[in-house]
Image 1: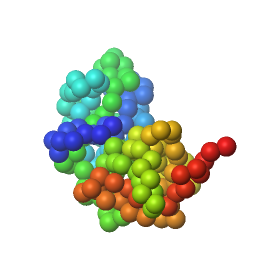
Image 2 (image 1 turned 45 degrees about the vertical axis):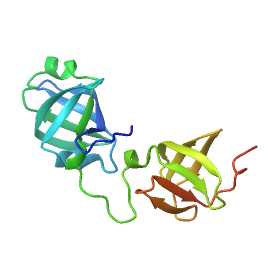
Image 3 (image 1 turned 90 degrees about the vertical axis):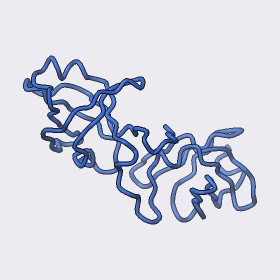
Length: 173
């Protein structure tokens, strides 16, 4: 999801289920580290652009999920009422990315061009494969390009362009 305003919210996870009976929720984090959301004291919970703020009371990692207790959510019924909703934080509250690192949502919408100047299209998303991330590029056809130094020559955020060392016919059967 590409958001253009610095005041915009960035989705960082989704409430997948209530947990136990005291209002805790189970969260599928959409962050590099499962516990990254715990660094934000206020979460925006909602869907379809309708957000409600909740203060994080307590949270912890539980296997591949994050468990959280949000202020005002004190029983299982309250937790069930937010099941399936997204969790977002203000874009401006995220820490700056390190040099050579990027937030996925900042890459979405960037033009992808190869070293010969052939425009492949725009980044429509990224896939985390475990071994490395993969750019999903939509143009005249979809291309999946590993987001690694061997193929990505330059990411120019100011020009909104990624230059890749990738053949025009690579990935064709």
